[in-house]
Image 1 (cartoon, rainbow, N blue to C red):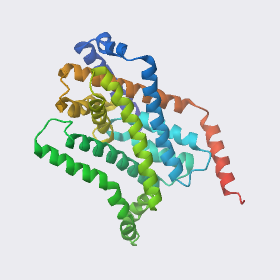
Image 2: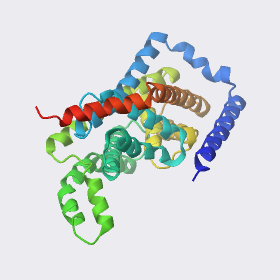
Image 3: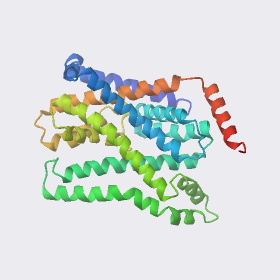
Image 4: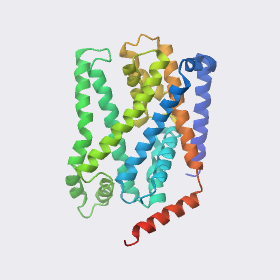
Length: 326
């Protein structure tokens, strides 16, 4: 266990070196970055502002929903989201997700199983949005394909749209089953279920914040990808969805190198863009560099902001204030 952090670092360094060498061999770094000259700096800044706004909305989902987080600790929630996001990029197979329940417990005193339930619920909502939009795009004919593919896309859209509603509707029967005695695993599952919203208003709030967050992010990334390739914004959004789907699914390479580009191409290449595959791949790499670079810089800034001791003391003060009688 003591060797695992060092091993993860070396794996990421090796993947980074291999990716840099591959980029140099295919295009050369100067050639790869040339399309950015066509993107106005002000417009790029606006896209980055949209990207960081989506992080702020993700933090708001947790801050508003989790009553154990003291009021006034939104900044700590934002730091948690940024650090968790950066670690997910750095570590393979979504292992960076372990930082979420660990930080929730360390900073806010939230039970680890309940925090895991919150995380699973949020990831289900993320997948719900991405799968729904991608399937609707495919069903609307943005992807080239036969009628069978369009019908499958409509079915996927229905399943993706209804998944959070189905889980929410089943939460009480599942909780009742988990409350049975003499089953330790069931009791643990019951604590995980506590991370789900318990009322319809909470469900609608989580859905609204999730759709707003992803809407802003996908619009920003889709616009950038469309400018890099000279495509319609709709196709740019479709490619951005493919890249972000690769980050939500369990199969995720260190840094997302390879899997992110594969996600972009999986939805964009069949879409009638007319661009050569090499150009599509180059644009996918550029979009990946933008997302990865902003995530790592934001995560590093969040990790280095303030003193952990001072932050914990501040949160302790907020919790004390919360417990004082009116």
